[in-house]
Length: 173
Image (cartoon, rainbow, N blue to C red; front, top):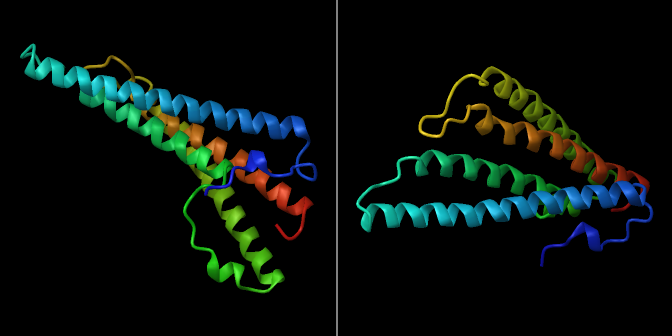
């Protein structure tokens, strides 16, 4: 069963208000990704109905579904980081003595923070450079496709930093 950080004792972690805020932010991302998945199912239902019943295929479905999948993927990835639900192979690290295990966790967290910063920076760069490029058939700019990259980068940095702080405050986690 996947563990949910909200169920853990966080008294020794970040102040309760910050922890609750980060949990609510993760919940919001999870909820929004779920709504987008339902919307994606509806869009494809409309595609099938339009193609086989109306004999008039809606051409915008492909572009809309690509944007939705990007949002679902990146928001889901950020939620997975907050809830510590990503698949990981850590049996070697966990079998090590406490000091190397702590060092490897620190290196992993710092690498994730660096990666999140890079995602946020490059995602923001893509958003700004694509403000005037239109997505065919939708009328939206290409920036809508790049925004989840920047959002996920910022969320990754926030969520990993909170996890790092929590581990620092409670050694042995």
